[in-house]
Length: 348
Ligand code: GAL
Image (cartoon, rainbow, N blue to C red; front, side):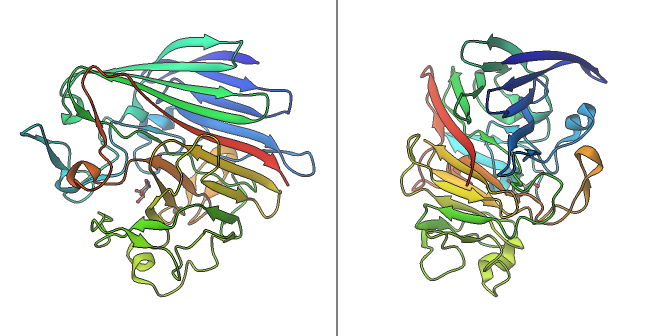
């Protein structure tokens, strides 16, 4: 079922869309940032849990430039070294907002803009938002038309689809920045969640600014090995330089088999038995263990502390635009391109 609600904000009217199904699963997505505000599903006792972190007041999402709760991030998620890159012989400068690097393309990130509600599709239980990003927007080349759809299926798949078309070659690596807590958004640390990640390798970072060195490192025998399920917290405090640099997990894992049929990650909430499976056709995922959360006021008066949520940000690798041996994030001119990420929920 699909319902809409218009809300007036400091910067104009936004539309929140609720998608629900017969399993009592429901989502609220806002045209402000094409942001996922709420994701409710039943736990093993039949109680409804909201499993994503967020703000209570819609106006707070205009300032969603620190935590990126539920955000649609673009054109490039994650880091771009020295906030610059070359493409087809031309050098482009984007904003320095993380030391002298760029993080998540901001300021004026897509997650703080009001998107057009392009299509409400009741048959498919799907909403599509549209954003026109002009040539030079945030410093990137080419006019880009971006559609993001959120669909909730009968069997609890949340499908997020990115459809992009640009009139010049341009870097494009979108992500959804939802923080999950499968015990409920206000339930505290996620360190006892069980995680399985089908990634044999990851991209180590050079220093605390988190730009990849460019190496592909094996997870085997390191705290980064989640090939077999273990709790997120099991090895997080080990003295291992990559964990110390980032204050926990905040790294790009290279997916062994990017696929929309087989999950790359399975996570279980230890208190609720809620299972999240994630699928994508993108090559990497930033697994972020919420290390920088620092008593952020959230929904229902929650205070989100360190590691109270985790993100599985599907993407091209960080700084890929400056790293020729990483898969290329370049969206080719006049070539419609689609990426999809699926989060499926259930109970044990
Ligand atoms: C993540 C990033 C983290 C942190 C977070 C937002 O994508 O990797 O380092 O910046 O976003 O707070």
